[in-house]
Structures are given as C-alpha cells and as structure tokens.
Length: 394
Image 1 (cartoon, rainbow, N blue to C red):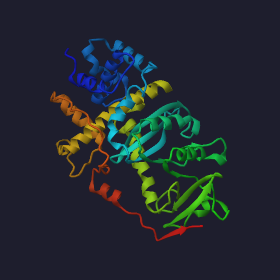
Image 2 (cartoon, rainbow, N blue to C red):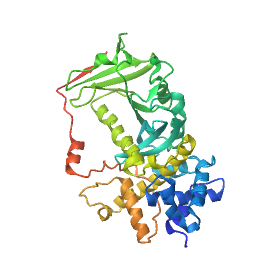
Image 3 (tube, rainbow, N blue to C red):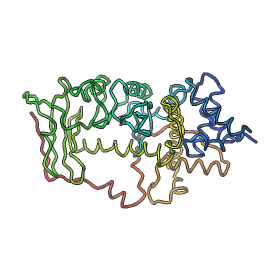
Image 4 (cartoon, one colour):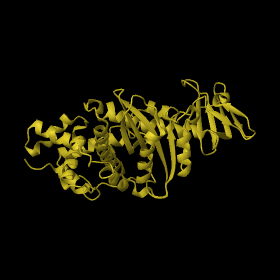
C-alpha cells in the first residue's frame, strides 16, 4: 500500500530537529509516533493496524517495535529534547512554572517527571522510570531528571518549581527537602514546596519549633517569615486551615509569602495530576502496555511524550486559528489542548489533509484550564475566604 500521509509528513517535519545515529531509527520513530497519535494507545499491539504499509505479519511488527524500545540508542536527548527546544524557543527570558512529581505503575515502578505548566495542564520536560516500590524517592535518584529539564530550558528563563511534601527525602529525617532546596537555590530558581508538620523552623530570634506550631485555627491563614530550616536555608512559610481540606496546608517558599502563595502552589494539581491521568485512564492507557522493564518504560514514555507534545501543539494551533468550535461543542474551551489535537489529527487523517507546520508555544498567552461545564468553571473561579489572616515577622 501507499506510505501513509501522516507518517511521511511527520518524518519530514521531525527530521528538521531530530538527528538520530541511524536514519532507519528516524523512520521507526516517525512510524511509532504516528501510530500513537492515531490509536491513542500506549499498547504496542494496538499500533499494528497503523503499520500495515510495511506488509508484515503481526509477529514481525511486534519484533520491530520491541527492538526499538530495547535499543539504548533511542534516547530523549536524541529525539524528544530537540522537539522541546523548538516548542519552547519563544520562552527565552520569560517567567515559567515547573512541577516535580512521581506516579506509581503497578506498585512496582516509579515514574519521576519534571513538567512545564502551560494551558491549565502540563507536559514533560524530563522523566525516568525506576524500579522502585514507593512514590517517595531520594534526591540522588531524581537529580538527573532536574538536570535534564534544566538543559532543555531556553536561556534566561525565570523558573519557579513546585513540589509536594512527600516527594523528597534526604539521608536522614533532618535532611528532608534540604538537598532539593539547596540545589534550587544554587540554580537561582524560585520554589514553593509543601512540607510536613514535623519540619523544624527557626525564627531570627533563635526560637525553633515544628511547622505544626504555626498551624492556624479553622478558616484562618498564617504568613510567617523569614525563617530558617535545616540549618542554612532561608525561606518563608504560609499555612492555611481550609474547611473541607483533609489537612492543614503548609507551603515553604523561597520568596516572601502571601495568600497568592496558595494559588501558586495549587497550580501543581491542575498541571501534573491531569498529565499523569492522561498517561493512564484519560488518553493513552499506559497501564495496558504490558511492559515491565524500567529502561523500556522510560523509552515508551519518551515516545508518548513526543506524541503528546505534537497533539498539544496542534490543539493550540486550532484554537489560535479560531477553529476550536469545529471539534469542541462547548461555549468556552471544554477540551484540553491534548484532546483537541488528537481530534484534529483524526479529522486531518480522515479527510487526507496535510499536517500543518508545527509551531512553537506562545509565551505571552497562557490559556486558562479547559472547563466542560459552567459548574466546573464556577468551582475553579471560587475564591477561598479566610476569616482572619495573620502575618508574623521577627
């Protein structure tokens, strides 16, 4: 049969940025990315219908796909990072928001990601899968992911990183979060990290107490600072007791805190949590892949990230061109850029239309999250009110 149009166009566009060690790898890469985009699946067997132009039996297809995923030459540095640099090229000198988090796979593997927050969601900058039975990992295990993420960022960006309280740990209980904060300070990155109640904070007058001693009564918020933690780290602390929340919020920040600190940290949930859901149940069904090898899973996620980024860019271009309502029936944008991009791609393939030239993301326009209903919009826009806000300065 004739070589599929999408595969040919992807190979032509990706060859501008991707420089593989072997050109045959670029062909396989373009085929797999096209198959992921059309199938919307992370399962190798479900890519086979989109590889039928090779006129092979299913077993031969599976052998080629398995070889590709086990090939150590297939790395994010060669394939995904050049695409990222193209997509982010216009962000030089801009303020950007990153998230750091983990997700468990089958209670056996831990996915560690640094993501770029944009458009109410996020997309991967760097990731690795470790065979690790817990979502809590040490600094030395995720430091390479931070370094890879830093390497793909445009020059002179102003970075703020968000991380959860249970994500990092040091060599001892006293070193919780310490190595991460010191690394971030060395890079001149701002940060906001949710911390545990037993973390000790020291005020300028020399008084040392656990974070729990600064927990406010219900419906109140405390803004504390400056303080020192872990002996040498200068920070500010914001705590809030919000009705309906499971426990009190405690966010440690490099910058002076305000009520907006809680809104800033809250972007972590809308960013990376939905991103992990897209990997699993909302879009790509990675849990059906059947793969159980950390290195192979790392390559699989890299390929999914390539397809994810292409779909996100297509969705952004659709909205930018004023054509969103052709695929999204909501009054305002009710579909994520990923879903819009996947549907636009299906339309292009069905009508045998050419794939547009992929553009970079616009830094001056960070669209709000998609909302499928007015009730959801009202929930997102709802402001949390405190009966009292107390600031402590020493």
